[in-house]
Length: 289
Image (tube, rainbow, N blue to C red; front, side, top):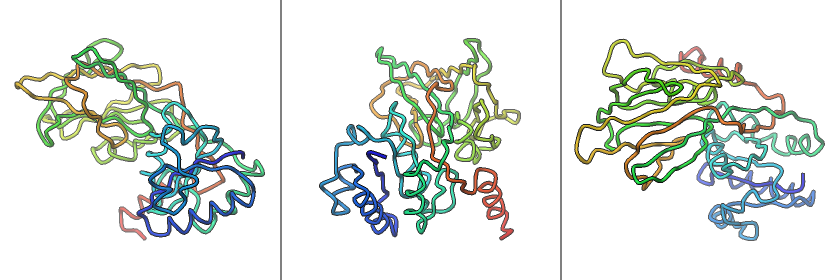
């Protein structure tokens, strides 16, 4: 390792303590580091604070300290600069954060020695065409949500698969998810759980106004296009990428979605793995433990 980018969720208990342990380990091993400016200031580490645009410059590892939401934040900050990431779990057991707080130094020693493998996760690419002619390109690790800006209002969306009309959904919206994101919002909306390595993605309607609307799983070559059908004056469609709403888009003409060539990279240290984490979650949800 030459440089590590640290992304902490500083409002979580123990994050300041563990961040300082991480910084101490990196200093002792003479490894450079960077943190977002505001986080660095909040932790008293201003000498390591950099603008978000420079956070991953020269970095060969990212360390996210928090829960799965912190990992999504790190991916969002990376943009198209894919840096291998390790997650330190300071929330409930999620699906992206495998290193427990008391094992931080041991995990760093193994990574520094090259004793790890890379677990690649599919990402979605979205191209949003606005009525003003602007094109917005985004990547998502978990999901893309399309619905009315007014929460809970019905929206009609034409869904085209490989440029041919498939159907029109009348719903609160639709969520398009990667296998990684299939255990998040899509699952809550009734979608299937998809193993992370599967070359597929899923579209799930949210509270559809129909009794026969179901999720649809696409293969890695399929392109999905979503076109809003707005029948009310002044109605607008909102788009959320990995839980963060896009702002100042104006009117949305259409959204092309497919699997991206880029893949997010997670450092694997033989943690519980997807199926063990899923089993633990299911037992908790079913009150079996």
